[in-house]
Image: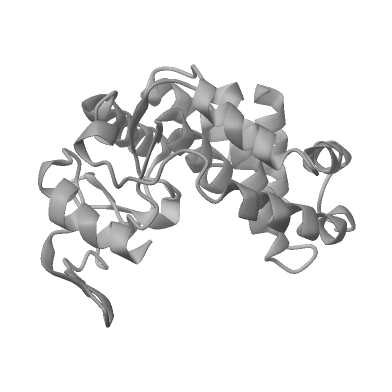
Amino acid sequence: MFESEVRFYREIAPVVGVRVPECYQSESGPEGTLLVLEDLSDWAAGAEPGAAASVLRELHDRWAGRAHNEWGWLRPLGAGEQLVAELYDRSWPELAGRSDLSASVRSFGEGLVGRVVEVETAVGQAGALTLAHGDASAQNMRTGPDGVVALLDWEDVSAAPGILDLAWFLVSSVEPERWQEALTAYGTSDGLSAVMPSVMVQGYLSASDLPDGEAVGWNARLEAALELL
Protein backbone atom coordinates (compact mmCIF):
# COMPACT_ATOMS: atom_id res chain seq x y z
CA MET A 1 0.00 0.00 0.00
CA PHE A 2 2.75 2.47 0.88
CA GLU A 3 4.68 1.57 -2.29
CA SER A 4 1.52 2.23 -4.28
CA GLU A 5 1.11 5.66 -2.71
CA VAL A 6 4.70 6.60 -3.53
CA ARG A 7 4.16 5.49 -7.13
CA PHE A 8 0.89 7.41 -7.24
CA TYR A 9 2.62 10.66 -6.31
CA ARG A 10 5.53 10.01 -8.65
CA GLU A 11 3.63 8.84 -11.72
CA ILE A 12 -0.05 9.70 -11.48
CA ALA A 13 -0.43 12.83 -9.33
CA PRO A 14 1.20 15.14 -11.93
CA VAL A 15 -1.50 14.20 -14.47
CA VAL A 16 -4.37 12.99 -12.29
CA GLY A 17 -6.59 15.97 -13.11
CA VAL A 18 -8.09 16.54 -9.65
CA ARG A 19 -6.72 18.34 -6.61
CA VAL A 20 -4.32 16.31 -4.49
CA PRO A 21 -1.60 17.47 -2.09
CA GLU A 22 1.58 18.68 -3.74
CA CYS A 23 4.41 16.17 -3.34
CA TYR A 24 7.77 17.62 -2.31
CA GLN A 25 9.67 14.37 -1.76
CA SER A 26 8.99 10.70 -2.49
CA GLU A 27 11.35 7.86 -1.68
CA SER A 28 11.09 4.09 -1.62
CA GLY A 29 13.74 1.54 -0.72
CA PRO A 30 14.75 -1.29 1.59
CA GLU A 31 14.30 0.95 4.62
CA GLY A 32 10.71 1.79 3.72
CA THR A 33 8.94 4.70 2.08
CA LEU A 34 8.92 8.45 2.62
CA LEU A 35 6.50 11.09 1.36
CA VAL A 36 6.70 14.80 2.11
CA LEU A 37 3.39 16.35 1.11
CA GLU A 38 1.69 19.73 1.14
CA ASP A 39 0.06 20.49 4.48
CA LEU A 40 -3.69 20.92 4.01
CA SER A 41 -4.51 20.79 7.72
CA ASP A 42 -5.98 24.31 7.61
CA TRP A 43 -8.54 23.19 5.00
CA ALA A 44 -11.93 22.04 6.23
CA ALA A 45 -12.17 18.32 6.92
CA GLY A 46 -14.40 16.37 4.55
CA ALA A 47 -16.51 17.67 1.68
CA GLU A 48 -20.11 18.37 0.80
CA PRO A 49 -21.74 15.29 -0.79
CA GLY A 50 -22.36 16.94 -4.15
CA ALA A 51 -18.92 18.51 -4.38
CA ALA A 52 -17.17 15.26 -3.48
CA ALA A 53 -19.23 13.25 -5.96
CA SER A 54 -18.45 15.74 -8.73
CA VAL A 55 -14.71 15.40 -8.10
CA LEU A 56 -14.95 11.62 -8.12
CA ARG A 57 -16.87 11.71 -11.41
CA GLU A 58 -14.23 14.00 -12.92
CA LEU A 59 -11.50 11.58 -11.87
CA HIS A 60 -13.35 8.54 -13.17
CA ASP A 61 -14.29 10.10 -16.51
CA ARG A 62 -10.72 11.24 -17.15
CA TRP A 63 -9.24 7.76 -16.79
CA ALA A 64 -12.09 5.48 -17.88
CA GLY A 65 -10.86 2.52 -19.89
CA ARG A 66 -7.19 3.48 -19.76
CA ALA A 67 -5.80 3.76 -16.22
CA HIS A 68 -5.05 0.03 -16.01
CA ASN A 69 -3.09 0.27 -19.28
CA GLU A 70 -1.20 3.40 -18.26
CA TRP A 71 -0.15 1.98 -14.88
CA GLY A 72 -0.06 -1.82 -14.86
CA TRP A 73 0.92 -1.87 -11.17
CA LEU A 74 -2.46 -0.56 -10.00
CA ARG A 75 -4.20 -2.92 -7.61
CA PRO A 76 -6.56 -5.11 -9.64
CA LEU A 77 -10.07 -6.19 -8.81
CA GLY A 78 -10.18 -9.12 -6.42
CA ALA A 79 -6.91 -8.34 -4.66
CA GLY A 80 -7.13 -9.59 -1.09
CA GLU A 81 -10.69 -10.85 -1.47
CA GLN A 82 -9.96 -14.16 0.24
CA LEU A 83 -8.47 -12.39 3.26
CA VAL A 84 -11.48 -10.08 3.47
CA ALA A 85 -13.82 -13.07 3.22
CA GLU A 86 -12.05 -14.89 6.04
CA LEU A 87 -12.04 -11.79 8.23
CA TYR A 88 -15.73 -11.17 7.63
CA ASP A 89 -16.73 -14.73 8.44
CA ARG A 90 -14.67 -14.63 11.64
CA SER A 91 -16.14 -11.28 12.65
CA TRP A 92 -19.77 -12.10 11.97
CA PRO A 93 -20.66 -13.97 15.20
CA GLU A 94 -19.74 -10.91 17.27
CA LEU A 95 -21.39 -8.55 14.78
CA ALA A 96 -24.60 -10.57 14.88
CA GLY A 97 -24.87 -10.01 18.61
CA ARG A 98 -24.58 -6.23 18.50
CA SER A 99 -27.43 -4.16 19.88
CA ASP A 100 -26.98 -1.34 17.35
CA LEU A 101 -27.77 -3.33 14.18
CA SER A 102 -31.36 -3.36 12.98
CA ALA A 103 -33.09 -6.59 12.02
CA SER A 104 -32.82 -5.87 8.30
CA VAL A 105 -29.11 -5.01 8.50
CA ARG A 106 -28.43 -8.07 10.64
CA SER A 107 -30.33 -10.32 8.23
CA PHE A 108 -28.44 -9.07 5.19
CA GLY A 109 -25.13 -9.41 7.01
CA GLU A 110 -25.94 -12.99 7.92
CA GLY A 111 -26.56 -13.69 4.25
CA LEU A 112 -23.06 -12.48 3.35
CA VAL A 113 -21.35 -15.15 5.45
CA GLY A 114 -19.59 -17.53 3.07
CA ARG A 115 -20.42 -15.30 0.09
CA VAL A 116 -17.89 -12.46 0.33
CA VAL A 117 -15.74 -13.72 -2.55
CA GLU A 118 -18.91 -13.94 -4.65
CA VAL A 119 -19.92 -10.34 -3.95
CA GLU A 120 -16.36 -9.13 -4.54
CA THR A 121 -16.39 -10.84 -7.94
CA ALA A 122 -19.64 -9.08 -8.81
CA VAL A 123 -17.83 -5.72 -8.67
CA GLY A 124 -16.35 -6.53 -12.06
CA GLN A 125 -19.84 -6.30 -13.57
CA ALA A 126 -20.27 -2.67 -12.52
CA GLY A 127 -18.66 -1.01 -15.54
CA ALA A 128 -15.41 -0.09 -17.22
CA LEU A 129 -12.22 0.07 -15.20
CA THR A 130 -10.91 3.50 -14.33
CA LEU A 131 -8.60 5.10 -11.79
CA ALA A 132 -10.25 4.58 -8.41
CA HIS A 133 -9.14 6.23 -5.18
CA GLY A 134 -9.96 3.06 -3.26
CA ASP A 135 -10.89 4.71 0.05
CA ALA A 136 -13.00 7.72 -0.91
CA SER A 137 -14.40 8.44 2.54
CA ALA A 138 -14.89 11.97 3.82
CA GLN A 139 -11.93 11.57 6.17
CA ASN A 140 -9.72 11.38 3.07
CA MET A 141 -11.04 14.66 1.68
CA ARG A 142 -10.39 18.31 2.48
CA THR A 143 -12.24 21.39 1.24
CA GLY A 144 -10.30 24.58 0.59
CA PRO A 145 -11.45 28.15 1.27
CA ASP A 146 -12.48 28.41 -2.38
CA GLY A 147 -14.55 25.22 -2.22
CA VAL A 148 -12.03 23.04 -4.07
CA VAL A 149 -12.04 19.43 -2.83
CA ALA A 150 -8.72 17.63 -2.47
CA LEU A 151 -8.41 13.86 -2.28
CA LEU A 152 -5.85 12.55 0.24
CA ASP A 153 -4.35 9.17 1.20
CA TRP A 154 -3.87 7.23 -2.01
CA GLU A 155 -2.57 3.96 -0.49
CA ASP A 156 -5.52 2.02 -1.94
CA VAL A 157 -5.37 3.45 -5.47
CA SER A 158 -6.63 0.83 -7.90
CA ALA A 159 -8.12 0.01 -11.28
CA ALA A 160 -11.83 -0.51 -10.66
CA PRO A 161 -15.27 0.68 -11.76
CA GLY A 162 -15.63 4.27 -10.61
CA ILE A 163 -19.02 3.68 -9.00
CA LEU A 164 -17.17 1.70 -6.32
CA ASP A 165 -15.65 4.95 -5.00
CA LEU A 166 -19.05 6.62 -4.94
CA ALA A 167 -20.68 3.70 -3.13
CA TRP A 168 -18.01 3.72 -0.42
CA PHE A 169 -18.33 7.49 -0.04
CA LEU A 170 -22.06 7.07 0.57
CA VAL A 171 -21.82 4.16 2.99
CA SER A 172 -18.83 5.48 4.92
CA SER A 173 -19.57 9.17 5.09
CA VAL A 174 -22.92 10.57 3.95
CA GLU A 175 -26.13 10.88 5.96
CA PRO A 176 -28.83 8.89 4.12
CA GLU A 177 -31.01 11.95 3.65
CA ARG A 178 -28.20 13.49 1.57
CA TRP A 179 -27.40 10.51 -0.64
CA GLN A 180 -29.47 11.91 -3.47
CA GLU A 181 -27.26 15.02 -3.58
CA ALA A 182 -24.24 12.85 -4.26
CA LEU A 183 -26.04 10.61 -6.74
CA THR A 184 -27.33 13.61 -8.67
CA ALA A 185 -23.90 15.24 -8.78
CA TYR A 186 -22.24 12.01 -9.91
CA GLY A 187 -24.80 11.78 -12.69
CA THR A 188 -25.42 8.03 -12.82
CA SER A 189 -26.13 5.11 -10.54
CA ASP A 190 -25.23 2.49 -13.15
CA GLY A 191 -23.45 -0.41 -11.47
CA LEU A 192 -24.36 0.71 -7.97
CA SER A 193 -26.29 -2.44 -7.14
CA ALA A 194 -23.37 -4.58 -8.33
CA VAL A 195 -20.84 -2.91 -6.01
CA MET A 196 -23.02 -2.19 -2.99
CA PRO A 197 -22.80 -5.64 -1.33
CA SER A 198 -18.99 -5.48 -1.49
CA VAL A 199 -19.03 -1.99 0.01
CA MET A 200 -21.44 -3.15 2.70
CA VAL A 201 -18.96 -5.85 3.73
CA GLN A 202 -16.50 -3.05 4.48
CA GLY A 203 -19.24 -1.18 6.31
CA TYR A 204 -19.96 -4.13 8.57
CA LEU A 205 -16.25 -4.58 9.29
CA SER A 206 -15.90 -0.88 10.08
CA ALA A 207 -18.85 -1.11 12.49
CA SER A 208 -17.21 -4.08 14.18
CA ASP A 209 -14.29 -1.87 15.23
CA LEU A 210 -16.59 0.25 17.43
CA PRO A 211 -17.90 -0.60 20.89
CA ASP A 212 -21.43 -1.99 20.92
CA GLY A 213 -23.93 0.84 20.77
CA GLU A 214 -21.67 3.25 18.87
CA ALA A 215 -22.35 2.06 15.31
CA VAL A 216 -25.77 3.66 14.95
CA GLY A 217 -24.53 5.82 12.07
CA TRP A 218 -23.11 2.80 10.25
CA ASN A 219 -26.41 0.99 10.73
CA ALA A 220 -28.37 3.90 9.24
CA ARG A 221 -26.14 4.01 6.17
CA LEU A 222 -26.28 0.23 5.76
CA GLU A 223 -30.07 0.44 5.90
CA ALA A 224 -29.97 3.09 3.17
CA ALA A 225 -27.74 0.81 1.08
CA LEU A 226 -30.28 -1.98 1.42
CA GLU A 227 -32.94 0.31 -0.03
CA LEU A 228 -30.84 0.72 -3.19
CA LEU A 229 -30.47 -3.00 -3.78
